[in-house]
Length: 83
Image (cartoon, rainbow, N blue to C red):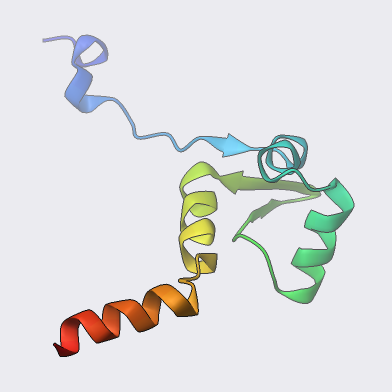
């Protein structure tokens, strides 16, 4: 059996994105991403020497963590559950 042809044996590779790619995704400048890293804000990142990379999955987690529910919707949900 040749392991290279077996799809279940393939290594799991994460998609790593550059600063330029992430800046386009979030529509912010590269300097904004650098500022976020400096302040401890923004999505988690990987530092490899001078290179900075982002896991695509980390960007999704960051957006989920930053998602807010409007107060009006939260109040409506509370009223619906209370009655």
